[in-house]
Image (cartoon, rainbow, N blue to C red; front, side, top):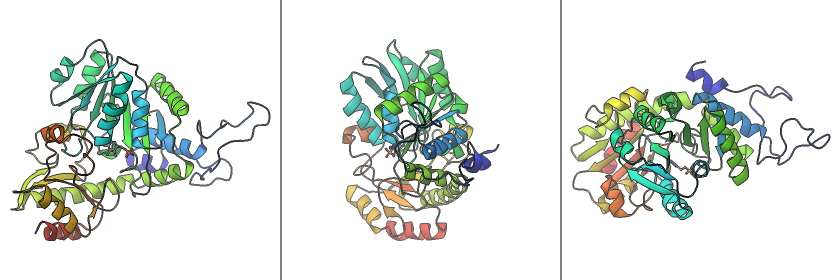
Length: 379
Ligand SMILES: *Cc1c(COP(=O)(O)O)cnc(C)c1O
């Protein structure tokens, strides 16, 4: 089955009760048993719920995995991955990381005795140089947020295989429409399904997808034992979102390209970060491991500072100033004061998240209207 069919049919069957084409919202916490243990595979909705199961099967299918797990948020999904580890274990992570992931790693899990190394991952030898006997996991986000750096997943998989580590990839920005990390050698794919997977800015959800049964078993155990699961209503919405993922992504990519090119030629723009440009430092890797370049773009205007950047995002009329990304509507954000405010200024400026940086999540509206909006806001 090809991707554009999988988004609609992958892992799905019509509801066995009445043949409903869409899985019903099984809004129930528990399931009747005829005798203790006599049930139809469902006992309690923290452990299993039929609507969530339908979503998890869909997620496994679109990522070319075998097992899907849906969580209450992207961070709950990451939290479950780190719970595979023990005190004393070490993680090598991308330094240009989603702010909430950085906060979870440093403010929660460091206190539990897990050590994180935040490094630039442009070079596999550099990553390998951080491996020691305690290293258990490589955590990759690509494209990175908000600098749109590209990390070579295949190269990271080589390092992880050689040293018997787990490789997890946050695939939130690319989605499986553009990039399938399990095919490139990753062990775990993670999503903030809040973003493109849901796609309509109407839910908060996380997902993990794996191929290996042993890793899946451990993660299902943690999912049930820690209990950060999503509800049936949100599962239904995410599943509905996935059914149009391919056509939404196609338009996100088209609009993203047009806007990246518009910004690049604009006399008031200093720098545009988008992996589709040939002069992007990792363009060739992006071309290799992605099927397109997506709708996430960051830029800096000439001579800009904190105040000027804030003025631009305030002036936008069609782009909404908001946290988050990946919805049908275009959003603009100011990472230094919003998504990345939890990262110390000194740390974030090292990776390019300067006060003047603006991040766009290009939606699927008419691109002429979006460009006109940027034109008037940049002035
Ligand atoms: C939003 C986001 C997360 C966190 O997901 P939540 O659903 O907000 O918990 C993690 N990684 C990336 C890249 C994100 O954009």
